[in-house]
Each structure stands twice: as structure tokens, then as C-alpha cells.
Image 1 (cartoon, rainbow, N blue to C red):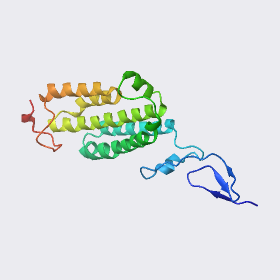
Image 2 (image 1 turned 180 degrees about the horizontal axis):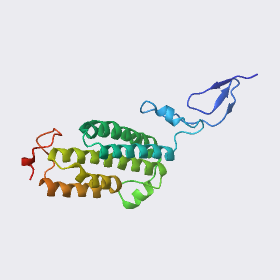
Image 3 (image 1 turned 180 degrees about the vertical axis):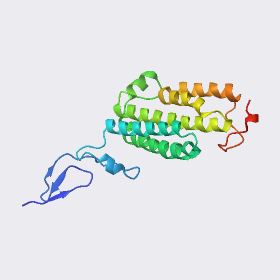
Image 4 (image 1 turned 90 degrees about the vertical axis):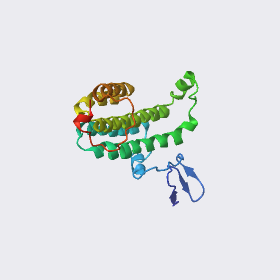
Length: 203
């Protein structure tokens, strides 16, 4: 009876007499702990774009819910969501860029090149995760900035929802509220604390 030697990261087996069976699948490098467990949820396929889309979409949605419903916990908008959650989405984005962009046709230099580039499903997924990470990061900034300026959180909820749904439209909405409520144009502030200023300092 011939024995078989299993090759890691591959569905092909090699017998001792040199015969081969199955199809060789290229290894995928794990970028963060737990990636291999997720990517091997199907024994015959790596993590497909639809599953990865669902995971990242749900993670971002949970981040937005927490950001909107927990205004009294500034560490959420300062550390947990922008660093850990957005950072995780950024790692997934980096993974897709490194592993899939090299085979994609098109470029960012012309409209036709972008259209050709985004005809690749993997590039579309990477672009969507790009939006998820950046929009969520902007939402965190809106919450932190509104706390510094003493703007009530209820006024920030509509811009947060719009930032989640329409990105730049939500940012524009927040900047308008920021200007009319706090009379602030410049984005930089001397203080890095999230403690709201006294009521007398806000016109």
C-alpha cells in the first residue's frame, strides 16, 4: 500500500513513487492572529471575497453603533475604534493590496484606467474596505472634536449617520454644525484633551 505525504497549504498530495494528485494552491501568509483559522473555514477554498466583505462590513457597522451610542466613553473614539478596529480593517486592506493588486489591470491615472481596475472583484473589495476604514476614522474624529468644542452629542448623531452612509456628505454636515454651533473654522486646537470647555468659552 502506498503512503501519502501531505503538503502544508496545499490540496495536492505526493506519493512516494513521485505521482501527484489534486491541485496545488499557493500559500497565503497570515497577517494577524486568527487569519489562518478564518481563511480555512472551507477546506478547499481560501476566504472568498463575499465572506471577507461580510466580516468587514459587520465589524464596521458594530463600530458605528458603539460610536453613536456611547458618547460618555471617550476612550471608545480615542483608542478602541480608531486604533484597533480601523487598524484591523487597514490590515485586511493591506493584505488585499499585496496579494491581488499585482494581477489587476488598469491604473489610477485616467478614468478609463480606474474603470478597468475596478472591474476586478478583489480590487472592488479592497476599495470598499478602504471606505469602511476611513469613514469610521472620520466618525471618530467628529466625536472627539465635538467633545472638545462642547457640542452636544445629539447634534452629532445625524452627521455620524450621514458619514456612515455617504462619507463626505456627513463630514460636510458636521463641519457646518461645528461652524454655527462653536464658531470654529480651524481644525487644530491647542488642547488635546477630550474634556469639553466651559460653557462661557463657547459662543
